[in-house]
Length: 191
Image (cartoon, rainbow, N blue to C red; front, side, top):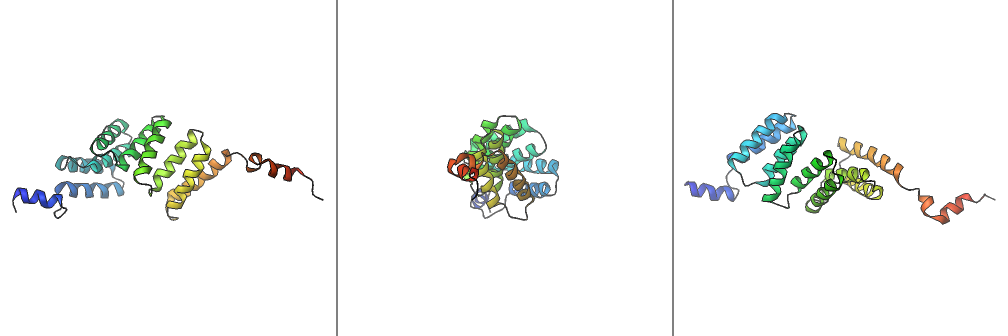
């Protein structure tokens, strides 16, 4: 097969590229808890296939995991230059903004991530946490409820979300205080 034919086959998904092989290896390293080798392999994937936003997004997430927020932000922003609809890049930037103390920026990016992939429970979970720190307890409650419907019960993050839900509910206004009729009924003595 000619070089041109290989390029066409690769673009059509008929041939696995070297970059994709490194990408898959990076995922395996990350799942094994080896962030350093995950970063090295995804960097190799980027070297071979520079045009894939998901590679930059993934390396950005790996950088967040390893505490390299500046590198993460650079990669995640570049991923959005390639593909502004990349949910993972928006999600990652939300985490970076949150860790840097910019709750409004975090909420903005989490909202965009949810717009492009509303079935990811981690997006809703982090939106809830950011809304909680922004003191928007009603939204935080809505978001954590959504996360809980999307997390599988066996996922440990589901347990964490339930803990957050309890914390959020302690901050919600009392139902009886918001409804004067209920408050009056409770205050009446029983006959």
